[in-house]
Amino acid sequence: MVANFRQFTLKKSKALVVDRLPALLAVPLLLGAALACGHALAAAKDKGADKHVDTDSIISTISASERTRPFPVGEKLAYFVNIKDGDQVRSPFRVAFAVTGMGVAPVAAGDIHDTGHHHILIDMPMPADIKAPIPFDKQNEYQHQHYKHFGNGETETLLDLPAGKHTLRLLFADHNHVPYYISSKEISVVVLDKPH
Image (cartoon, rainbow, N blue to C red):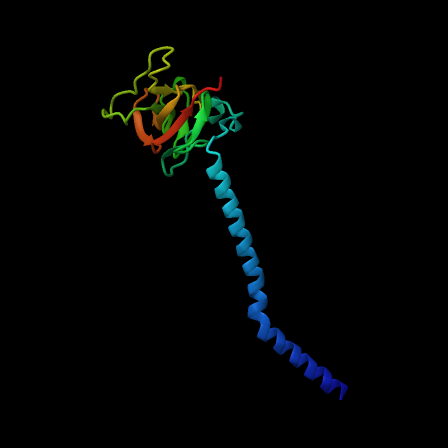
């Protein structure tokens, strides 16, 4: 009789668990979804509240000579690492950049297959002449900067631009500054007035 009672109790408790299984599984899922929504809302609120970007957080310790090597075949794309379209910054601000599908090499290394160096086009469209080298700005130009060359194989810099809205685009070129037409999307940044 005790065995029958245990068997009956076991069957009854299994039936209760099976009947309530969907509800028992739903509770952790609902809690997880609520937590995820809370985190997403907090992140969106933080993102919208402060558009000022701390660009000083990207500092490279790898020298240009350590980065001088061909890159394996892949998608060829240049991109900004630490800034994005619509950012508000204060000059001077750090800009870090990278390329995929190509290697980075200083101009002094010469003609190394599938390597080149970065350029930043400031407030300029893509060059129309696909065989012409990217021009150089005048020395010590501040108000009308257009072409920043990184012929030492740099992958970051400090830009000091006047206050206002500026467009930036990366353009990757060979050792003669002739573009490969591997570029980033053009982004706009707003340079805020310097604090007094």
